[in-house]
Image 1 (cartoon, rainbow, N blue to C red):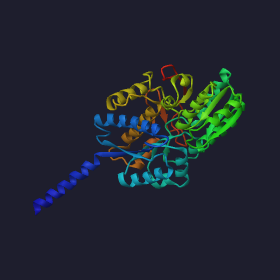
Image 2 (cartoon, rainbow, N blue to C red; image 1 turned 30 degrees about the horizontal axis):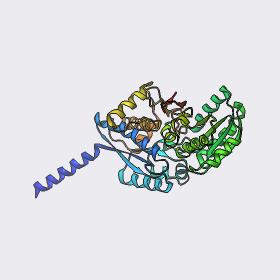
Image 3 (cartoon, rainbow, N blue to C red; image 1 turned 120 degrees about the horizontal axis):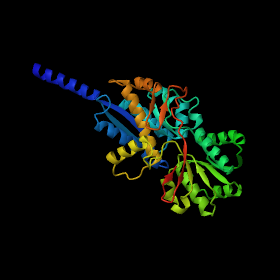
Image 4 (cartoon, rainbow, N blue to C red; image 1 turned 180 degrees about the horizontal axis):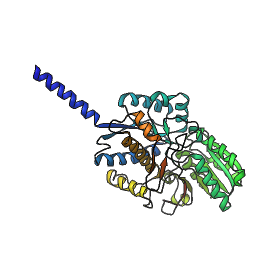
Length: 374
Protein backbone atom coordinates (compact mmCIF):
# COMPACT_ATOMS: atom_id res chain seq x y z
CA UNK A 1 0.00 0.00 0.00
CA UNK A 2 2.82 2.41 0.90
CA UNK A 3 4.54 1.60 -2.37
CA UNK A 4 1.31 2.24 -4.30
CA UNK A 5 0.78 5.58 -2.54
CA UNK A 6 4.35 6.59 -3.23
CA UNK A 7 3.96 5.70 -6.91
CA UNK A 8 0.68 7.59 -7.11
CA UNK A 9 2.27 10.63 -5.51
CA UNK A 10 5.16 10.44 -7.94
CA UNK A 11 2.78 10.20 -10.86
CA UNK A 12 0.85 13.23 -9.65
CA UNK A 13 4.08 15.17 -9.28
CA UNK A 14 5.19 14.15 -12.76
CA UNK A 15 1.80 15.18 -14.17
CA UNK A 16 2.08 18.57 -12.50
CA UNK A 17 5.58 19.08 -13.86
CA UNK A 18 4.46 18.04 -17.32
CA UNK A 19 1.60 20.54 -17.20
CA UNK A 20 4.03 23.26 -16.12
CA UNK A 21 6.09 22.64 -19.27
CA UNK A 22 3.26 23.81 -21.53
CA UNK A 23 2.05 27.34 -22.20
CA UNK A 24 -1.21 27.91 -24.10
CA UNK A 25 -1.86 30.62 -26.68
CA UNK A 26 -5.29 30.72 -28.33
CA UNK A 27 -6.22 31.77 -31.86
CA UNK A 28 -9.96 32.27 -32.39
CA UNK A 29 -10.98 33.47 -35.83
CA UNK A 30 -12.94 32.67 -39.00
CA UNK A 31 -11.76 29.45 -40.62
CA UNK A 32 -15.07 29.18 -42.46
CA UNK A 33 -17.47 31.88 -43.65
CA UNK A 34 -16.86 35.15 -45.55
CA UNK A 35 -13.51 35.93 -43.89
CA UNK A 36 -12.17 32.37 -43.90
CA UNK A 37 -9.20 33.20 -46.14
CA UNK A 38 -7.96 35.92 -43.78
CA UNK A 39 -8.58 33.90 -40.63
CA UNK A 40 -6.84 30.83 -42.06
CA UNK A 41 -3.87 32.90 -43.25
CA UNK A 42 -3.51 34.54 -39.81
CA UNK A 43 -3.47 31.10 -38.21
CA UNK A 44 -0.92 29.73 -40.70
CA UNK A 45 1.55 32.52 -39.97
CA UNK A 46 1.16 32.08 -36.22
CA UNK A 47 1.49 28.29 -36.44
CA UNK A 48 4.70 28.55 -38.47
CA UNK A 49 6.23 30.74 -35.78
CA UNK A 50 5.20 28.60 -32.81
CA UNK A 51 6.23 25.38 -34.59
CA UNK A 52 9.64 26.96 -35.14
CA UNK A 53 9.86 28.05 -31.49
CA UNK A 54 8.90 24.60 -30.23
CA UNK A 55 11.46 22.93 -32.52
CA UNK A 56 14.09 25.13 -30.86
CA UNK A 57 13.08 24.09 -27.34
CA UNK A 58 10.10 26.35 -26.70
CA UNK A 59 10.11 29.57 -24.68
CA UNK A 60 11.97 29.43 -21.38
CA UNK A 61 12.03 25.66 -21.87
CA UNK A 62 8.24 25.43 -22.18
CA UNK A 63 6.32 24.19 -25.24
CA UNK A 64 3.76 26.54 -26.72
CA UNK A 65 0.41 24.88 -27.46
CA UNK A 66 -1.56 26.87 -30.02
CA UNK A 67 -5.29 26.32 -29.55
CA UNK A 68 -7.35 27.01 -32.67
CA UNK A 69 -11.12 27.57 -32.84
CA UNK A 70 -13.37 28.62 -35.74
CA UNK A 71 -15.79 31.45 -34.91
CA UNK A 72 -17.24 31.47 -38.47
CA UNK A 73 -17.08 35.30 -38.39
CA UNK A 74 -20.10 35.33 -36.06
CA UNK A 75 -19.97 37.69 -33.10
CA UNK A 76 -21.90 35.51 -30.68
CA UNK A 77 -19.73 32.52 -31.56
CA UNK A 78 -16.52 34.50 -31.02
CA UNK A 79 -17.64 35.58 -27.56
CA UNK A 80 -18.75 32.05 -26.65
CA UNK A 81 -15.43 30.58 -27.79
CA UNK A 82 -13.29 33.25 -26.11
CA UNK A 83 -15.01 32.69 -22.78
CA UNK A 84 -15.01 28.91 -23.17
CA UNK A 85 -11.36 28.64 -24.19
CA UNK A 86 -10.29 31.03 -21.41
CA UNK A 87 -11.94 28.72 -18.88
CA UNK A 88 -10.97 25.40 -20.49
CA UNK A 89 -7.42 25.95 -21.72
CA UNK A 90 -6.19 28.81 -19.51
CA UNK A 91 -4.27 30.66 -22.26
CA UNK A 92 -1.80 33.36 -21.30
CA UNK A 93 -2.70 35.25 -24.50
CA UNK A 94 -5.15 35.31 -27.40
CA UNK A 95 -3.93 36.29 -30.87
CA UNK A 96 -5.45 37.25 -34.24
CA UNK A 97 -8.85 38.61 -33.18
CA UNK A 98 -10.74 39.57 -36.34
CA UNK A 99 -13.94 41.54 -37.04
CA UNK A 100 -15.04 45.10 -36.22
CA UNK A 101 -18.59 44.16 -35.26
CA UNK A 102 -17.27 41.41 -33.00
CA UNK A 103 -14.68 43.56 -31.25
CA UNK A 104 -17.19 46.41 -30.84
CA UNK A 105 -19.64 44.06 -29.14
CA UNK A 106 -16.91 42.61 -26.92
CA UNK A 107 -15.96 46.12 -25.82
CA UNK A 108 -19.57 47.08 -25.11
CA UNK A 109 -20.20 43.90 -23.11
CA UNK A 110 -16.94 44.16 -21.17
CA UNK A 111 -15.73 40.77 -22.39
CA UNK A 112 -12.05 41.75 -22.38
CA UNK A 113 -12.15 42.78 -18.72
CA UNK A 114 -14.17 39.70 -17.75
CA UNK A 115 -11.74 37.31 -19.42
CA UNK A 116 -8.62 39.12 -18.18
CA UNK A 117 -6.27 37.78 -20.86
CA UNK A 118 -4.27 39.95 -23.30
CA UNK A 119 -5.33 39.93 -26.96
CA UNK A 120 -2.40 40.47 -29.34
CA UNK A 121 -3.23 41.61 -32.87
CA UNK A 122 -6.68 43.08 -33.60
CA UNK A 123 -8.08 43.34 -37.13
CA UNK A 124 -9.37 45.72 -38.40
CA UNK A 125 -7.53 48.80 -37.22
CA UNK A 126 -10.62 50.96 -36.77
CA UNK A 127 -10.05 53.97 -34.53
CA UNK A 128 -13.34 53.14 -32.80
CA UNK A 129 -11.72 49.90 -31.58
CA UNK A 130 -8.55 51.65 -30.39
CA UNK A 131 -9.74 54.80 -28.70
CA UNK A 132 -10.43 54.14 -25.93
CA UNK A 133 -10.25 50.38 -26.65
CA UNK A 134 -9.33 48.11 -23.75
CA UNK A 135 -6.15 47.71 -21.67
CA UNK A 136 -6.23 44.03 -22.67
CA UNK A 137 -6.10 44.76 -26.42
CA UNK A 138 -2.67 45.16 -28.09
CA UNK A 139 -2.60 46.47 -31.66
CA UNK A 140 0.41 45.22 -33.62
CA UNK A 141 -0.40 46.81 -36.99
CA UNK A 142 -0.99 50.39 -38.10
CA UNK A 143 -4.64 51.39 -37.95
CA UNK A 144 -7.13 52.36 -40.62
CA UNK A 145 -6.48 56.07 -40.15
CA UNK A 146 -2.78 55.61 -40.89
CA UNK A 147 -3.61 53.55 -43.99
CA UNK A 148 -6.19 56.04 -45.25
CA UNK A 149 -3.86 58.97 -44.62
CA UNK A 150 -1.11 57.30 -46.68
CA UNK A 151 -3.51 56.54 -49.53
CA UNK A 152 -4.94 60.08 -49.63
CA UNK A 153 -1.48 61.64 -49.42
CA UNK A 154 -0.36 59.52 -52.36
CA UNK A 155 -3.46 60.34 -54.42
CA UNK A 156 -3.08 64.03 -53.72
CA UNK A 157 0.58 63.91 -54.74
CA UNK A 158 -0.08 62.17 -58.08
CA UNK A 159 -3.17 64.24 -58.89
CA UNK A 160 -5.79 61.49 -58.54
CA UNK A 161 -7.59 63.50 -55.89
CA UNK A 162 -11.22 63.38 -57.05
CA UNK A 163 -12.38 60.21 -55.28
CA UNK A 164 -15.47 58.13 -54.58
CA UNK A 165 -15.60 55.89 -51.52
CA UNK A 166 -17.20 52.46 -51.20
CA UNK A 167 -17.41 51.57 -47.52
CA UNK A 168 -18.73 48.60 -45.58
CA UNK A 169 -21.85 49.58 -43.65
CA UNK A 170 -20.40 48.31 -40.36
CA UNK A 171 -18.23 50.05 -37.72
CA UNK A 172 -14.90 49.78 -39.53
CA UNK A 173 -16.30 51.10 -42.83
CA UNK A 174 -18.24 53.96 -41.25
CA UNK A 175 -15.24 54.97 -39.17
CA UNK A 176 -13.00 54.99 -42.24
CA UNK A 177 -15.44 57.12 -44.23
CA UNK A 178 -15.75 59.60 -41.35
CA UNK A 179 -11.98 59.97 -41.27
CA UNK A 180 -11.84 60.58 -45.03
CA UNK A 181 -14.49 63.28 -44.72
CA UNK A 182 -12.49 64.84 -41.88
CA UNK A 183 -9.07 64.99 -43.55
CA UNK A 184 -9.89 65.18 -47.27
CA UNK A 185 -10.25 69.00 -47.44
CA UNK A 186 -6.90 69.69 -45.81
CA UNK A 187 -5.25 67.13 -48.11
CA UNK A 188 -6.87 68.74 -51.17
CA UNK A 189 -8.92 65.63 -51.93
CA UNK A 190 -12.51 65.98 -53.14
CA UNK A 191 -15.03 63.25 -52.25
CA UNK A 192 -17.54 62.95 -55.11
CA UNK A 193 -19.42 59.85 -53.95
CA UNK A 194 -20.08 57.72 -50.90
CA UNK A 195 -21.50 54.25 -51.50
CA UNK A 196 -22.44 52.00 -48.52
CA UNK A 197 -22.04 48.24 -48.91
CA UNK A 198 -23.95 45.82 -46.61
CA UNK A 199 -21.79 43.52 -44.48
CA UNK A 200 -20.10 40.79 -46.57
CA UNK A 201 -22.26 41.63 -49.63
CA UNK A 202 -20.86 40.33 -52.93
CA UNK A 203 -23.60 41.43 -55.35
CA UNK A 204 -22.26 44.87 -56.11
CA UNK A 205 -23.39 45.63 -59.66
CA UNK A 206 -25.58 48.53 -58.51
CA UNK A 207 -22.82 49.89 -56.27
CA UNK A 208 -20.36 49.70 -59.16
CA UNK A 209 -22.72 51.76 -61.29
CA UNK A 210 -23.01 54.34 -58.49
CA UNK A 211 -19.25 54.67 -58.30
CA UNK A 212 -18.96 55.04 -62.06
CA UNK A 213 -21.67 57.68 -62.11
CA UNK A 214 -19.74 59.78 -59.57
CA UNK A 215 -17.17 60.78 -62.18
CA UNK A 216 -14.33 60.20 -59.73
CA UNK A 217 -10.75 59.75 -60.92
CA UNK A 218 -10.08 57.12 -58.22
CA UNK A 219 -12.09 54.75 -56.05
CA UNK A 220 -11.12 54.18 -52.41
CA UNK A 221 -12.68 51.04 -50.96
CA UNK A 222 -12.98 50.33 -47.24
CA UNK A 223 -14.33 46.80 -47.52
CA UNK A 224 -13.91 43.27 -46.18
CA UNK A 225 -12.10 40.74 -48.41
CA UNK A 226 -15.18 39.23 -50.10
CA UNK A 227 -16.81 42.60 -50.77
CA UNK A 228 -13.57 44.22 -51.87
CA UNK A 229 -12.80 41.48 -54.39
CA UNK A 230 -16.39 41.55 -55.66
CA UNK A 231 -16.14 45.32 -56.12
CA UNK A 232 -13.10 44.90 -58.38
CA UNK A 233 -14.98 42.23 -60.35
CA UNK A 234 -18.16 44.25 -60.82
CA UNK A 235 -16.37 47.48 -61.72
CA UNK A 236 -14.26 45.78 -64.36
CA UNK A 237 -17.33 43.88 -65.64
CA UNK A 238 -18.96 47.18 -66.68
CA UNK A 239 -15.77 48.32 -68.38
CA UNK A 240 -14.77 50.73 -65.62
CA UNK A 241 -10.97 50.78 -65.32
CA UNK A 242 -10.77 53.65 -62.85
CA UNK A 243 -7.85 53.11 -60.39
CA UNK A 244 -8.89 51.28 -57.21
CA UNK A 245 -7.20 51.76 -53.84
CA UNK A 246 -8.10 49.45 -50.95
CA UNK A 247 -7.11 49.09 -47.32
CA UNK A 248 -5.00 46.09 -46.36
CA UNK A 249 -7.90 43.71 -45.62
CA UNK A 250 -8.41 42.68 -49.24
CA UNK A 251 -5.68 40.19 -50.22
CA UNK A 252 -4.47 39.73 -53.77
CA UNK A 253 -5.57 36.09 -53.69
CA UNK A 254 -9.17 37.07 -52.92
CA UNK A 255 -9.23 39.38 -55.95
CA UNK A 256 -7.74 36.73 -58.24
CA UNK A 257 -10.41 34.26 -57.15
CA UNK A 258 -13.04 36.56 -58.67
CA UNK A 259 -11.36 38.28 -61.62
CA UNK A 260 -8.86 37.36 -64.35
CA UNK A 261 -5.33 38.62 -63.80
CA UNK A 262 -5.67 41.34 -66.43
CA UNK A 263 -8.45 42.94 -64.39
CA UNK A 264 -6.49 42.74 -61.14
CA UNK A 265 -3.28 44.33 -62.44
CA UNK A 266 -2.88 47.85 -61.08
CA UNK A 267 -5.21 47.49 -58.09
CA UNK A 268 -3.47 49.18 -55.16
CA UNK A 269 -3.64 47.79 -51.62
CA UNK A 270 -2.39 49.57 -48.51
CA UNK A 271 -0.06 47.26 -46.56
CA UNK A 272 0.78 47.20 -42.85
CA UNK A 273 3.77 44.83 -43.02
CA UNK A 274 6.84 44.50 -45.22
CA UNK A 275 6.25 42.55 -48.43
CA UNK A 276 5.78 38.84 -47.58
CA UNK A 277 6.49 37.83 -51.19
CA UNK A 278 10.07 39.14 -51.17
CA UNK A 279 13.10 38.90 -48.91
CA UNK A 280 13.63 42.65 -48.70
CA UNK A 281 13.66 42.83 -44.87
CA UNK A 282 14.87 40.58 -42.07
CA UNK A 283 11.26 40.15 -40.95
CA UNK A 284 10.13 38.90 -44.35
CA UNK A 285 13.15 36.58 -44.55
CA UNK A 286 12.38 35.15 -41.10
CA UNK A 287 8.72 34.72 -42.01
CA UNK A 288 9.45 32.99 -45.30
CA UNK A 289 11.98 30.66 -43.68
CA UNK A 290 9.47 29.62 -40.99
CA UNK A 291 6.72 29.03 -43.55
CA UNK A 292 9.03 27.09 -45.90
CA UNK A 293 10.19 24.75 -43.14
CA UNK A 294 7.10 24.27 -41.01
CA UNK A 295 4.23 24.70 -43.48
CA UNK A 296 5.81 23.60 -46.78
CA UNK A 297 2.43 22.42 -48.07
CA UNK A 298 1.17 26.04 -48.03
CA UNK A 299 2.64 27.57 -51.19
CA UNK A 300 1.28 31.13 -50.99
CA UNK A 301 2.90 33.93 -49.02
CA UNK A 302 0.41 36.62 -48.07
CA UNK A 303 0.10 39.77 -46.00
CA UNK A 304 -2.45 38.10 -43.71
CA UNK A 305 0.00 35.26 -43.02
CA UNK A 306 2.80 37.64 -42.07
CA UNK A 307 0.37 39.55 -39.84
CA UNK A 308 -0.40 36.31 -38.00
CA UNK A 309 3.33 35.58 -37.79
CA UNK A 310 4.07 39.04 -36.36
CA UNK A 311 1.25 38.76 -33.81
CA UNK A 312 2.63 35.41 -32.68
CA UNK A 313 6.17 36.76 -32.42
CA UNK A 314 5.04 39.68 -30.28
CA UNK A 315 3.05 37.35 -28.02
CA UNK A 316 6.04 34.98 -27.86
CA UNK A 317 8.43 37.77 -26.89
CA UNK A 318 6.07 38.88 -24.11
CA UNK A 319 5.80 35.28 -22.85
CA UNK A 320 9.60 35.03 -22.82
CA UNK A 321 9.87 38.23 -20.79
CA UNK A 322 7.14 37.04 -18.41
CA UNK A 323 9.52 34.38 -17.08
CA UNK A 324 9.33 30.68 -16.32
CA UNK A 325 5.83 30.82 -14.86
CA UNK A 326 3.88 33.08 -17.26
CA UNK A 327 0.35 34.15 -16.39
CA UNK A 328 -2.02 36.46 -18.30
CA UNK A 329 -1.18 39.25 -15.87
CA UNK A 330 2.59 38.79 -16.30
CA UNK A 331 2.27 38.63 -20.09
CA UNK A 332 0.13 41.78 -20.00
CA UNK A 333 2.81 43.60 -17.99
CA UNK A 334 5.51 42.39 -20.37
CA UNK A 335 3.54 43.67 -23.37
CA UNK A 336 3.12 47.10 -21.81
CA UNK A 337 6.90 47.32 -21.45
CA UNK A 338 7.68 45.83 -24.87
CA UNK A 339 9.89 47.67 -27.34
CA UNK A 340 11.38 45.46 -30.04
CA UNK A 341 12.49 45.58 -33.67
CA UNK A 342 11.39 42.43 -35.52
CA UNK A 343 13.75 43.12 -38.41
CA UNK A 344 12.64 46.30 -40.11
CA UNK A 345 9.34 46.32 -38.24
CA UNK A 346 9.50 48.15 -34.89
CA UNK A 347 6.89 47.46 -32.22
CA UNK A 348 6.72 49.75 -29.19
CA UNK A 349 3.98 49.77 -26.57
CA UNK A 350 5.92 51.86 -24.05
CA UNK A 351 4.97 55.27 -25.45
CA UNK A 352 1.27 54.74 -26.11
CA UNK A 353 -1.83 54.92 -23.93
CA UNK A 354 -4.09 52.87 -26.19
CA UNK A 355 -1.71 49.95 -26.85
CA UNK A 356 -0.99 50.75 -30.51
CA UNK A 357 2.52 49.47 -31.08
CA UNK A 358 3.24 49.87 -34.82
CA UNK A 359 2.93 52.51 -37.54
CA UNK A 360 4.30 50.78 -40.69
CA UNK A 361 2.26 51.55 -43.86
CA UNK A 362 3.16 51.08 -47.53
CA UNK A 363 1.15 50.72 -50.74
CA UNK A 364 1.42 47.61 -52.89
CA UNK A 365 0.22 47.29 -56.49
CA UNK A 366 -0.84 44.02 -58.12
CA UNK A 367 1.65 43.31 -60.93
CA UNK A 368 1.45 41.23 -64.11
CA UNK A 369 2.40 38.07 -62.16
CA UNK A 370 -0.47 38.54 -59.72
CA UNK A 371 1.88 39.58 -56.91
CA UNK A 372 2.16 42.73 -54.89
CA UNK A 373 4.94 45.11 -55.80
CA UNK A 374 5.95 47.76 -53.27
